[in-house]
Image 1 (cartoon, each protein chain N blue to C red):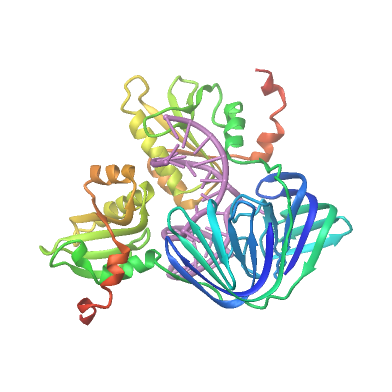
Image 2: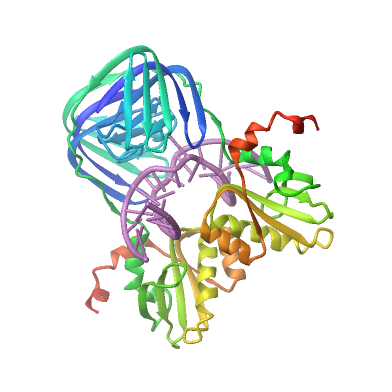
Length: 219
Length: 219
DNA sequence: TTGTTGATTTCGCAA
DNA sequence: TTGCGAAGTCAACAA
C-alpha cells in the first residue's frame, strides 16, 4: 500500500464525469492497483476512486488510472507532501454477525414469533421470480409466505406482494397469506402492507439470539 | 488527518457485530473524528469504520470510537509501525455530470424522443406519494407520466405503476399513460412494464447532451 | 457471465 | 429531524 499526501486535481470520466479542483488530499494506492482519493472529512467513501481491476500509469505530475471498461481517473499532482509505501500483507478478513441471513436462520427455528403451532415448509422457497424467505403452514394448515428484512421498507412489501400474487395462482398452495417481518418497519411500509392484507411482525434480534441455544434447539 | 500503520484487531458493536483478527492495517482518523480501517485490497470500502459524528477515546494500545447511537468501534493496537498527521484543509468538493437529474433536464426539452407534437406539463409533477419525473400531453392531448432512470430496473416500474394507479383516480387527468425511460432497461423490467401497458424508451445520454445547445434551446 | 438482493449501504434533497 | 430515492452504488451469491 502506498500513501501519498499531495496537492492535486482529479478528473473521472466513466459512468459519469466528475471533477475535483486542486486541493491537498490523501491518495491511497492499494496492492491490487486500485486508487482512492480521500479528503479530511465526509465518510468512508472517497471523493473519487478507481476500483480494481485497473492499471496505474505514472508520469511526472500526472497519474492515469484506467480500467477494462475504458473509465479513467486522471490525477494531476502539483505538490507532493509525502510519499511512502508499506507492505501490509493479506488481511484475514471480517466476521459479521447480525445480518438478514441470521434473522432468517433464527426465525426459521422460532416460528412461535409468528404464531403457535406453525410449521416450516422450507427456507428460500423457490418461485419463478425469486425465493421466498420462509414458507410456513399456520396451525390451521394454511400457507404463509414470510419476507424477512433487517429494515422493512416499501420495496420489501412490493417484493412480497409479487410473490403472493404468483403463489396464489397455484391452486395447490392458495390461499397464501403474507407476513412482513423485520427488526424495524417504516411507517409507509406498514401502511402499504396493512392495506394489502399483509401482517407486519417486528423481530427482536437480541432476544431471538438469546434463545437460540435453548430448548428449541433440541428439535 | 492522522494516518497510522499498525498491527491491530478490531471489534464493532452496533447495528451488527463484527470482528477483525489481528493484522497490519491502515487506520485513518479524519478531522471530524471518523475512523477508517483499511486493508491493502478490497475496494474503497474500509474493513471497518465509524462514521461522524463520533468521538475517539485513546488509551495506550486501545482506541475506542463511540457515536451517539451507542455504537462502538474498539481497536486494539499491538504494534505501531508509523503514526503521522497532516492538515489537509477543507476540500472544495466534487462536481458531477451525467446523473439522473441531467437526463430529466435534457428529456424535458427534447420531448420528441417520446413522440411528435408532445407538450411538457411540468417536471417533478407532484402526487401524494412523490413527484412524477415528467408529466406530458401527447399530440392527441392525452396525459402521459414519464419515469426516468439511469438504469431501468423492476423497482422503477413499480414506482411508475404506483403513480399511474393514483393519477388514474383523478377524473381530470385520466386516462394517464405511462412511459419508462432509461439509458439502460433490464429485461425483467421491460417485461413487467410491457405487461402493464407501460411503454419503454431507451435514452442516449451522449446524443441528448450533444444536441442540448442546438435549436431546441431557442424555445 | 449475468442477474438479484442485501448493505453498519452512503448521500442528497425536501417536507 | 425524518423520509425517500439515487448511487460511478459495492459485494455476495445463485443460475
